Length: 294
Length: 281
Image (cartoon, rainbow over all chains, first blue to last red; front, side, top):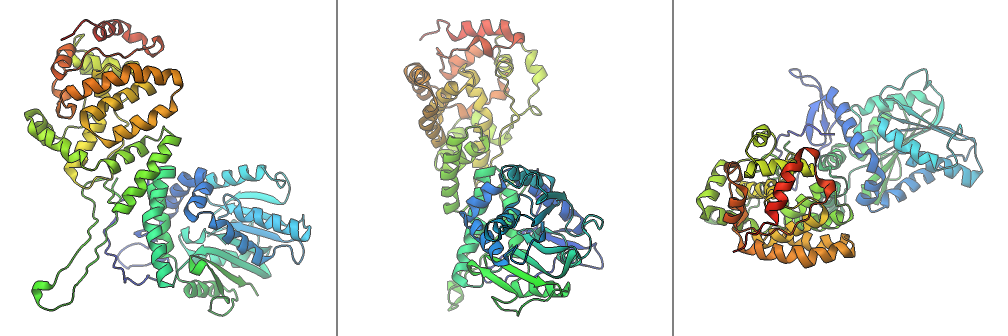
């Protein structure tokens, strides 16, 4: 459960512009590096470090989400799924990546069932972390979808989904909620998303993002860096994982940059404004990016 | 494991003459490995949060430790000054000894004669099943020397149990907390002393308040301040002589038959006699 936590000291000035970093930088003298929160680590180390974070948070993941966001994450996820309207044009085959504990999958199935009486829509929950999948499986056992073809759980890496199980052009909806900032290479995930989606299908990503409003941004920063690690200490005894969480949010690309990355993978998005390629929730604390495969 | 934030926030007043140019830095580099610097709001938040959570889940030793550190306040400088006032305490502050199975030779303790402090401590460890290795390191005290005083307190807590001849069940822990509050003055001891009895049933609470607490408060306040005792240099000392020297007598502790390990039954007979022995002033 322990993370290597030796860090270089950083000077953070209040006026420090939030850096728009690509997820990996290559340096001719050193091997490729990427960011793990505010640390810089070798690229091949990130996966196992993220794994140990999620192994340790899995059992109290839902509790901590509620505590840290004061329940607001539920509103965000409701809006995310509500805007996608799964089941409106008939049963869909959905893939929910980094979907560990099943929040989005459950909402998709419930939405299709309640609004459109659709019991054929299926969701495949994919996650790299076995502990998180176990939590999701446990949670789904309490629902009516357990042991039906509507839900299945798969352990796989979003950057390289196995081609036999996740065929090209086979899904109607690809969702990834609060997972894409933890991957080592965002372009690889976007490329895989493009591969597995059918033409005409939607890619949707819910993620924490940049808050531009100065007052909200300051309050959000103060809350993130002062309260959240302490909540982690008090509720789970694990400060380091929650420190990683708030830092990884800061290192994620800003809204227009991420929209450009989505376009680079081949998707077509709306215009680069709030309401176009992305929709800010709560001023940018969370944000929904969407793209369509043509 | 070191985990820290470092922020330097320079502030400049208007540049008139150089004598008015002041730069204020809030430096939050850690002062020792494991140090997590907190500002006053975070300290308060952690204090309240850990108090609530440790009432709900008393097995969270890390939170009780955090509560102790965030509420210590002026108690730690006072304890440090008490240590500085005696030669033994000064030696502790100079050596900064730690207590765990690597620094204390447990085998050597088992081989000491019956009735010595070292042997009594080893027997106590076996009877209670406690290990000295599970103490949480100090994180939230800014001054390294005061952090050491806190760490020393935490590691010597078992010695206080043993010298007062108490076990480690909840009523004994509370009795020792009352003793520590009278002896050392730490706010954490008071908080545990007040919050702890809420978890006891009425019968245990009545035993606690009728027998243990009066004893703890009386002998805690009259005995020598235990923080400045260099326990590791006294292993061979006779435990009853040590108790007399410190001013601790007539422990009311009761040990149930269940808490006795098979190896230590002879020693148990011995300590039971000593605890209720007729040593009065």
